[in-house]
Length: 295
Image (cartoon, rainbow, N blue to C red):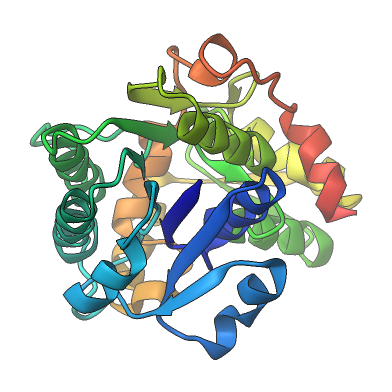
């Protein structure tokens, strides 16, 4: 199968691309920076230079493709890269190009918590709007909503691991009881591969790890897995909110933004985990996955 992939150089994309190639698919990846994407070419992927706002590049990407896998997303707005521009406008262009190219399968990565509610974050609302574009496209589609993804490229997990290594105390926001359900990157990649290959997988599916845990335990698990567990100190939420607002102007350089803090408090767990029931994947426990790359 010829698979056109957006976001192939990202955290999830590089694992998906490797797995698709291992399973015998031909991967054609849209990349903005050809020199930095050469690792994909070495693995066997075909590269198409361009971005989501270049219709000609999307036409080249999708010409003759059997399926499209759309992964591009952002967690912090910066300049022209707003949630609306990337999640909504970008998805609309990919959907339109895929429909024009006659692709027979569309796989879209959304996020747990995507919804149209007025009290949702702009991140979650635009993720929902992108889902609606896919659902209304007329293309045979599967939408996957992963929880927080654990893996070697996870910036939040790497940051907490470094803090455990070098800091005598680890800050935890508020009471630290926010729900999490981290899912291992290889399990996510396999779910995407099966969604790509199984025509019967249609609709929207949430992906989480095998068990939920409070954020405080999430932080403790990272300390244990890194070999440097430290005591935790709880920071009043009022102070944390003030600090997040102060960091908002820093964009991608911010340690945490107001929107990221809201999403953390809201939690990332799912009672409708499809990873076993739909995809038949036995998810790897969070701490076992951590030990595979933090040691």
